[in-house]
Image (cartoon, rainbow, N blue to C red; front, top):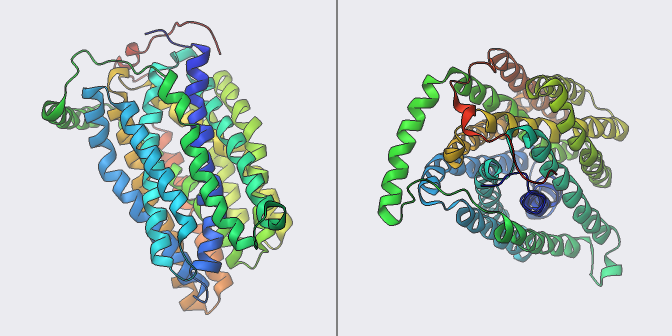
Length: 439
């Protein structure tokens, strides 16, 4: 299969543009605000944080348990695009449905959000896996970074429109800010569905040597899954990288999902938090592209180390935030490295796995990330509750929960030190290094 074709690369990367609207407007932006102030109106701030953390964790657990199995089955049946389409449209429908949930009905909101998150995370398993049929090894850092940068730009563009809707609802013929937020959920679902279409039409999925169908596909996939698990355990480089990734990406995901909630708990104005999210998006667009080229120059592993160090500074600094200017400064720092650490992790891992079993291996990759996300939001929410009960201070509880995330970056960075890129056991030989038209 011909790699590095311009149309294929851009069609693949546009899926990041599509689903990042969910990550930005829903996961990081309006859902935490609306969940706390509208659907959980009147509840204690730490109780609503724990509810949100539980919804994130349940969704993460379901994805974590199913991702490797689905990945193995899709590899045997050449069904990555079909699985991606199913999860993407499931997530889009659930997101649109959030616009129908009435005030105070937080269990319904949490359930729809959890299923939408499953669609978002499940689709990413197969989206990530398709990169091995899109980019050659020499282009992988740059192509991976392109996806994340388009995600920041697309997610940020729609989020900016959604923010304008909430600030000036009368311009859009809406009654108030609450109505604007509900319509924003609808726009995200439609955006996600529409911009998934180019990938469906123009990204050609690599075919397996012996494609299977029906129950044969399921049996072959499950059998291969057991073999891959044994192979990962024997391959020290892959095993250690996955273990390191498990910890540090949890810190990244937890900050994405819980930052706005923490800002509200510290008493910051919701408008200031929205501005900070926009800063992350529009700083993240050029920064993710630049980080891809940085990884090409200094190596993906060193680039990941640099991002971990900056995240450690962010978590420690976050515990001492006093005003909105501090929150803006942290938003700039997050924007500089968030897309970079995600892009280089994806491209680094794609180089060390078999290309013809990419969905299965990326199933493990996403499984570990989501198992970590099961721990992170709950850790943050319940440490906050514990410290508040001991100290009697909501503010101190929130700050303690922020500091707890630093542990995940410390453990992940320490484990990454033991990953030796020369110990590839010949796996990278499966990846082609030449292709067609460059990006």
